[in-house]
Image (cartoon, rainbow, N blue to C red):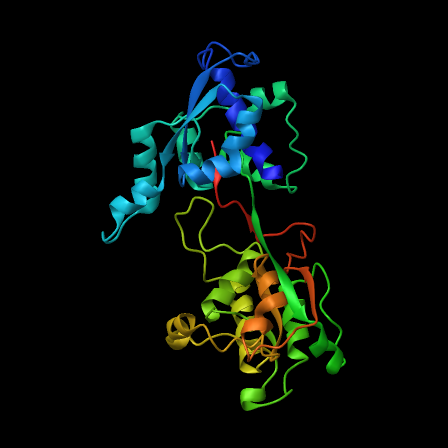
Length: 338
């Protein structure tokens, strides 16, 4: 239910706007119970919108109508076209329909803010006493950063990743399991404890980069550090540094000594297509980093995949930057409502 209310403040703001202009009322009057109006909303499709939000909203405001602009229409028009810039096409689509509430990426929200096309929600949130404390710490700050310090949108959900591990493998080989707030160096050191356990097809790996090649792991490791590919202005490549060299050495050493398994680049696409060779579910890899959806795989995969084993699993935080152990680089927002 939480996500219903996080978009509801946007709808409430639009309802309040129905009776006044943007420039005349920075803090808007509450709509009367007999108020009527229409809100134009961009969403995937009309049925899903009412199921997720519209029906709940109409309980409180039964006289407010919705006009749903189906986002899937845009994607149908782009089918078969090559080299499509979907973010640019989405902005064109929104400009064409001019909705009251629309769904955009965090990056597109920033562009629209700079162009002066979005409504600042801070005053409405303060007036409505809308509680932002229910958000994961840091996410509101992330949104404000893209809005130049102001809040121009909200998201109903966020995504993040964690470290899953096979507790039985750690017990079997008398190795301490992972703990919260480990650095990547500590994860690789822990993975090295599995070096030499098994061989060939029975090799046990400490860390397993599922569906990822070495460069994927490198960027994932860099994400938890202060390393950047470009300078703050995005003008100069700063890849050739001691920090990047050290990170690459950490990774390559771990792959060479078989503490870490990544898919060779030449085989990566074939393996994704086949969807096989999953070492974690076969009990041949001790740790993986995945998102929350992976939990259902751990619980149920053995029921339909004969090669998978039922796993006694545990979960800890994804690796952190030792300089900021209470923060994660592996959380983000997939969609914004503005």
